[in-house]
Length: 399
Ligand code: GLV
Image (cartoon, rainbow, N blue to C red; front, side):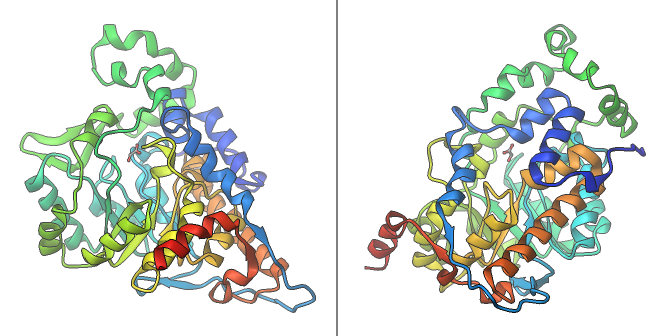
């Protein structure tokens, strides 16, 4: 289904895409993307903490065409940005996961597909000319997840992401208020009080039904068919991955495993000891345990603990290219972005995702030029001032 949206170049920054997504999407869909857990303290702090890192530019230096290329797990990327797994993207735009994967591949980067997705993993892999990673939740139990892992291998996914911060779902208060539970009961009487938000977005509604109005997860094949949409809380709770699971997952997957949800140096070391090929410093975008530290604040501790033994990535709170540059200066190899591109997808589909990536790319180029740095490979701690107390844990970790 073709939908004409706003001209992507009208969006100057990610916040513009966010506002446009809010205008197009029903409240419950927008808030699913935008919201965090409890008081949303970590959600806000993830973004704000980047402000505590200051730049130390080298001026009067020639930087004609900064080189943004890097590799992650041996895969070449045109910029140090990977699209993070984002659940339910097919609610944001028709065939949302395929559309986002196409945009990621065209931009020269990796698309990560969430287990909680509306498009078949095979179709998503086919949609991208680039590499893709598969994010695994153990929904439906070990046999169901094992079958999906096989499918992901056969389809050509090059790494498996295990998210380790969901022993229970975070308390997403916006979802509760918007009637997420009632809407998923499929009982008209319970749904009725929450239907108005969809009627208020007729453009979205017709796109949603034009796409089949499907509310199922085709990558979680239960004995009686694909798992139906259910409350995200219940699903996450049933999907918990523990260190014990790594053994059997490694046996059937055989490829690289990325552990996402590292908050401390101790867990970073544990992940590497358990065979992680890369780790993601992540607090699930502030959607799980509210009150945990911002990821950029945790990064020095994690890099000190495990940075010489694994590739360290970071997500949560990245909204500008300068955030990306700061993370790279502090030891991240690349960042993952979730909301930043999901706003683009919700606002304008594929061109919206492309615009989000372009905004971040031109931000990084400009920041490198202003810093007097010729390539992302040359970024290091000498380009930033990091609050001293963030480094205290580093000294303790390496002592
Ligand atoms: C799923 O992982 C979510 O955070 O909603």
